[in-house]
Image (cartoon, rainbow over all chains, first blue to last red; front, side, top):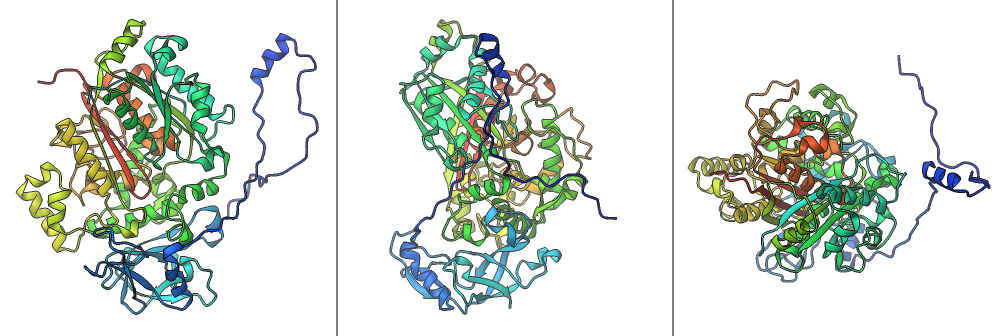
Length: 181
Length: 457
């Protein structure tokens, strides 16, 4: 039998209080008693809208909206970054864009998130994965779909996968995700 | 560089929430303790302090910019020089090293390192969000920013490549929780079994709630001094415990913010630039690593932290350590996850890369004389997280690395029993220990070696 709830759900919010208890007189004894008060805790909302520029990495997001996965490559050495990087970390030289949409891909590592940051809680459980792409030196962090999270297995590592693109772009890295090939 | 002594320290009780005090007043608890342990009064001590370094990770948690100066003010240290350091989870360890630098360089004779975090001001899921903002906010965070998820991916790779098991990870949780049972400062003082750890709610497969540290409110303080500073303190009446404890090695390393961007190096590069002195000098170990590479392992991969290895190599070189397992009497390391304790055994050279799982379950990192309810194949060699670590003590980020320094100080002074009210966690005859502080997915790591002035000929 399922466990019956034995605690009421807690919610924030409540009444506006117009009088906080405080001694009627401020004689030394009464003031000394203030040291025994429990703390007052108030709510403070903090909401901000940022104008976040992707800067030199912007073409990577533009590519996703057009169903392409592009990468940064050092023209001299061919070292390739799955996530965009304007300059190569070894030489400091500017990188060039290459298209890696059709490269073969495998799962390098993964997890199933059953909990998470507030923003992503409604999406749990979800599968996070690092993907290896053929001829690419670094990995790509992504979501993996088309697998049963309840059957998570180390056998998923090495699984062939392919990119899939959102039809309605959100201009976020989640515009691309991977599914079993 | 001048010799630097750690002369005193204090830690506030770490707790899930401390609404009874503001962050300044929580730091003062630890500060007052460190002054009282020297036997000085507040005004005399403050008169001898040359300056300070402040440690706290997140302006989001405090919802207060320049919180450091509010602590400096509250402690009565204005107008002495001070600055804040920030390096994610390694903030406390970096703070300790910056205070060391202030004294070692000759800039100060007495420097206070103080750190704090008040993480209870938001719900856990919002706290996870703040922490996840310490990953690339263009490419990592939006995919599902969650640090437990990032570390769980490292785990699956470690398991796949090296055969590490969830039970080996759980043995770390059992060890650290049971150690903390004897530590009055710890937030979680519970006895768990391997089954308890595995049956706890799954957070990010295969990590359960008991594989992961908790968020905390808390503060810690250490006092560092030069020989001249020590003389001034003692001339003013300070009772600095003997044997004296000196910082003998300091190292720090870094890596790419995006875990996916780490460059993976070949065998020769690893042996030349990352292998420990001990690994390089062993034919058997070189062959072992060659076999790993032949099998497809690349370094650091996502299973290892080259920042940690770099920090360790630098600190060991300075401290003259060539065999960390044999030459360190204990380690307090950043076990935000049971898996990261295992990864860190390897980075710190306590065992070879790939052997952290069996090492964890062997008993070598356990405390002697404590019943863990586990069948351990080996005797304790170098207790790791004798305090209970982050998993059981809690992790108020800016305080954590300094908490490790304080616990290390007490180990080396042989005063654990006095401070914890229980001598079970005193490493008998401890002469040298290391503290390890770690940020992000391995972005900043600091390792410091402390040792007492007991001759070990």
